[in-house]
Image (cartoon, rainbow, N blue to C red):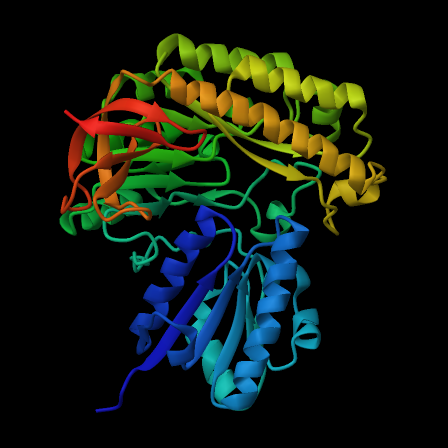
Length: 441
């Protein structure tokens, strides 16, 4: 009996890339590959890439050059670039990284076995054609990336929003939703495997829509169905576009104890002029009204966001508007970035006129404001008791464990030998900007 070949997948970028890597692992496992834990042991290395920011692509190019060196030592090693960067740069990657064997875009993963056969015939293989229908609903992902307690469940692919700075509609295609029955089937499998938490994923989950057997599912209905059918499962979701967030969705969150009281709502800027230039389709005041709506029904919720500084034409006044909105929204956490120009987007035709030095200074100010907000948010939790799902041992001490609250905050507490997935009650006694500290009740 022939020995299965070893597969190693490196994943860069967002949660959706993690979910995609698990789809790829399932497809190739069915084709005779076994996952391995290090690149040194692999017969096939796939690098699942992200094109959202220039730094992400630079990291992949640097890693690709390291893999080239590995291939020079082992000519039988096969290397592939998959995902958004393969889609965006296409076959120019063969020129940038001599030694790469195959390229596959986000909608071509089912063709990987076929592409690998082409490679074995001493050909370079490529498929970066986008699909209008592919959702991988017939694939049961190999959930290996996030451990055996929490899992990502992809509910839709692509995006129709065309924010002017964003490559996603061009690298992942237009929006399409996975059938609800397929999503529920995957969650059933995860429950049978004793997973305790799922995160429903989409570029804009609020746009989810499918119909089956005369039943219509928009995202609030899907979320309600998942929460009702899997009452022992903790449920999260990402990401919500502010323009589509509805009161119906907020009420579903409020009505189910197993839906985590935390939401990621990217704002990007507090300036109406910049938001319009970004094609975000909402104003700063409309965004803040969504924040008020959420907190009206779920006072204990935590809200995180994305912020881009230094976008085309951003003035000092625009920047101050962002700082003010952050304070009004009172985010508990934020992903904060300097704008980087992406070829092929609408913003690439605009003048990237904010000097790098100014971008860095503004980013420092944004980070400073968010650190103050995060620290105060954590201080407000001192004395409160939360249900925490244990995730593992603390990195600092084997006598401490850590987990997350339903509000998505990390808690460290004194304990040993608790199984991951165990739920415990923790009273918060202290905090840092990033972490809560507590004691078991």
